[in-house]
Length: 103
Image (tube, rainbow, N blue to C red; front, side, top):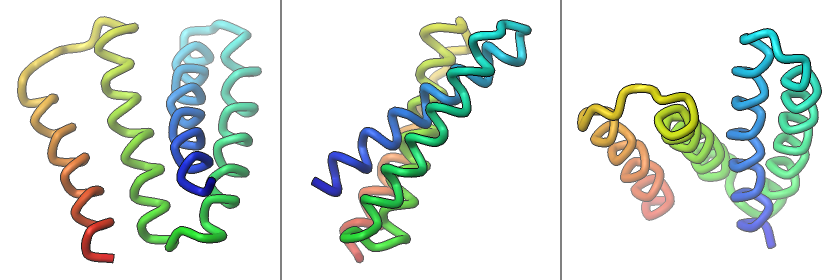
């Protein structure tokens, strides 16, 4: 169950970043989405860390948030889709997997 909490926490992090972008572009709904999603994300991360090591849990959470936000930016906000961005996302994913494997 902890891994499910952790994955949902990462997805909520991406939703919170979406809210942050909306707020930065003067949409009032962003000010509602952002704190709710960040709050849910942190609560679920805390629950996940009851059984998953802190270093692994935090790496997975930030990895989902970072990669998910970059991909969302490319799809939703039409940001650059340069191959180097995909390479960097791949490096982040490989690093998180590697950290899990050696823990």
